[in-house]
Image (cartoon, rainbow, N blue to C red; front, top):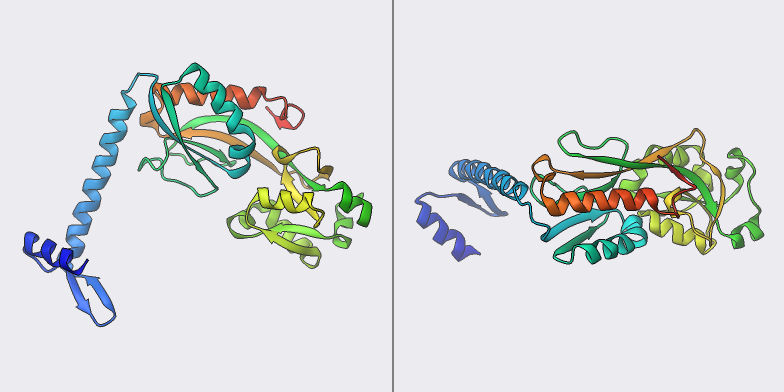
Length: 264
């Protein structure tokens, strides 16, 4: 790295880094060069978006990002049926709650659980989901089932950690029932799994509903999350992305597992 920096500075004809006892720091010339490089990078990103947006062939690769549960439970079936119709379209699936930058092509199409999608993106609201408290039959057998939300204070609760803890429902849960929380989890899938194992009662969106959990009652006041399909405006007419967006929309809306819990 040291040799590469020296070689780069000789090629540019300027000292780009100040050598300090505790490391390297950009010089004034280095900061100016960085600003120019960032602007060039943004122009290249914008050009790539424009070129991709003129691709009308049902082929190529789509970089798709989705939260854990939607990726594990719903997407395998949806993408399999899509591939049967469009075998020349391949996928790069990025799983997690991290917000990727669609402008920089970190992803082409995002499935996001949000009620406030970024204004610079375009897409469709798929459906809304209520949230409820869930517990396993084994937990209910051992500790009983609360009849009211106030009764949760006498039970063992699972709460959120990390980015998940910022959601209003989890903030309220942490402030109201702090003494009843026995475990925190950074993902809904982990929380659901811990509830299945009988560790406590979990607050979950209804897409986490499964036969191994008992839906006790909805959270009060009502808390609803929404599923959105989002892409960059320059990509919405790209054929492979348009086709996948439409397919995912119809798949979520018609999924029998969501019919009883979804708000259309």
